[in-house]
Each structure stands twice: as C-alpha cells, then as structure tokens.
Amino acid sequence: MHQESATGSNKGLIPGRRRALFAIAGGQLLVLTLWFSASAVAPQLETLWELSSGQTAGLTLAVQIGFVAGALISAITGLADAIPSRRLFVIAAFAGAVANLSLLAMNADTYPLAFTLRLLTGVTLAAVYPAGLKVMAGWFIRGRGMALGVLVGALTIGSAAPHLVRGLGFDWQGVVIAASAAAVVGGVVLAFLVKDGPHEVSGHHFSFRQISKVARNQGVRLSTYGYLGHMWELYAMWTWTAAFLAASAAARGTGDGWVPTATFFIIGIGGVGSWLAGGLADRIGRSKIAGGSMAISGTCALATPLVFGLSPVLAVGLFALWGLTVVADSAQFSTMVTETADPDVRGTALTLQTALGFLLTLVTIRGVPVIAEAVGWRWAFPILALGPAIGVVAMVRLKRSPAALDLAGGLG
Image (cartoon, rainbow, N blue to C red; front, top):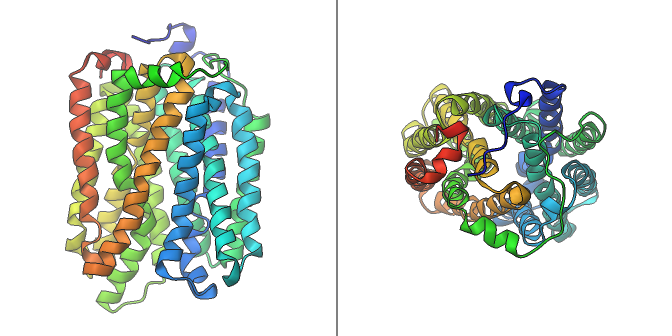
C-alpha cells in the first residue's frame, strides 16, 4: 500500500491550497490551447495551403505523435522525476508557444515544416501535462480526485478554446497568435504564482528499475488499461466532432456556421464533467465513477448514427452528453496512478500512462475519417465504443483487486 500520511493538511488546512488549485488549473488551461490551435482552423488551412484530407489530419496527428515521443523519452529517462515539475512545465510552455507561433511563417510549400512544428508542439505538451498533474498531486492527498478533475477540466476547456476563438470570427493567424500568447501567460503563472506543495517528491537520478517498478504495480497496470480504453475514444471524438456536425448539417440541407461554437461547447462541457466526477470519485470510489462514465460515453458513441441529418438541437444534445462524460473519467485514471504508484516513481508512472494512451489515439484519429470516407460520417463514430467497453472491464477488475484499498481512502 502507498497511502501517504494524513496530517492537518489532509483535513484541508494547507495554507494556499485553494490558490494553488486555481493557479495550476489556470496555467494548464492556458497552455493547452496550443493543442488544437491548428485543428480548429484546419478547413481554412486546407483551402489556403491546398492540403489533402490526409495532410489536414496530419496537423492533428503530428501533435499526438510528438506527445507520444516526448512522453516516452520522459518516461524512459525518468525526466519527469528528475527535473522539478514546475520548472519542467514552465520551460515546455514557453517552447510550445514558440513552436506554435512559428506556424505564421508557413505556406503551401512548407507543409513538412508545419508538420514538424506541430510535432514539436506535441513534444512540449508531453512535459506540460504530466508535470501539471504532479504539481497538483503535491498539494493534495484528500480531495486529490477533485483537484485532478479540476485540472483535467481546465485542460479540456483549454483544448476547446481555439474553436471558440475561431467561432468569434478570428482568422487562422488570430487563433494561432491567441494560443501562443495564452501559453506564455500559463508558463508565467506556474513560474511566479505557484510554489511546490508539501507532498511534492524531490527529484532523483534515473534508474531502469523505475520502469520495472511501475510495470509490476497491479494498480498502475489496471488503471492504465482503463485509461487506454478511454483514450481510444476521447481524442478522435474531440478531433472529428466538428466534421461530423458539418456533414450532418449538409445532409439536412442547412448551413454550418454554428458548428465552431457548438464544438467549443461540446468539448468544453467536459470540464464540468471532470470537476463533478472528481468530487464524486472522492466520495464513492474512483473505479465506479470511471467505469460509469465510460459506459455512458460508449453508449453515446453507438447512438451517433441516430442523430445524423436531424435537427442540430438533437445532434448537439447527444454530443453534449458525450462531451460531458467522455473526459469525466480521465482525471481518475491519473489519480489512481498517484495513489497506487510508489511516490518516487509517480512522475514516471504518470508519463508512461499518458504516453501509451496518446500512442493509441493515433489509430482512431486517423481511422475515423477513413471510415467516414468509406461509409459516410453517419457511421464514423460507433467503433469508438470498443475502448470504453474494455475500460469498464478493467475498472471492474480493479475494484475487485487488492489495489482498490489504495484508492480514494479505501473506496476503490
């Protein structure tokens, strides 16, 4: 068991804890606007740069590939535990802003360079996301599920923000500039407004025994299986929701000017889901909340053909429920790792989990448009339900395992 000692801090008496919660979440929100800064304006870039559908998808895939590469390097080398988490976050945020802003110099003849810049942006985000989780975990033991839920909620809203900027009428350059500026501000917030929490684990030198220690941990393994099922669904849904809604509007014979704003709402509402799920998980158990969220989101994926071509109210209603639940479980998988992994390899365990999850997203982000081209957008999303189904099984096994005693104070 890896329960950390409960002190007065465990009763919510840590000075500055609430400020840290909002500052860390705010910084994460601002930096994560980099993720979809190109995807949100993909239709404009496709026309302006004369891109093929594969190249357009590549702008999103490049971020995922970069994230996976960066996370794997971090996990294998132990970087996530060797460098202080806040320092790593700040450096990566600034580097990501520079890579993203460099897109302004691109044109149709420099697509390979644009792909490379998106790849580098993904590498930087591989440092930002797990580092943010580790900084937050350093402030919370009791209420950690809520805290990481708030953090993932911030990530969700940040990821959705470029769609809102686009929906407000900004061109692609405006979206890119806004995201880069937000990332710089996010780095400044972590640099100057946040200190290390009382439960932050000091850095240490890397040993390959860290990887084997993580792999042998049953709680980390089952949490990761659930996370993989969750990630099979999540980023493909986020990436292609706008395309599905636009195709649905075309099938109905109506305009699609509402799609960017609706997409922001659909993705952004996941922030509320993450916050609510985090609080519930602290009270009734993480495996129950994660499994329940996946059961609902998987059902939504299966139901998408039923609303294709119907009123936007019906389509957006179903997708809003999907958006609410599709990311609600995400923070709980990370929290499970922080509660079951040995503290000295917590950063490595978090980074390895996220690396494997984002590696899997490459399959569905590329696969969904292939299905759409073959049989139409109506049938593009049901395959995503496979991941949540597997994740539910993993959560049932985790609930029945000895590792459940380490989760949410023994609630599983």
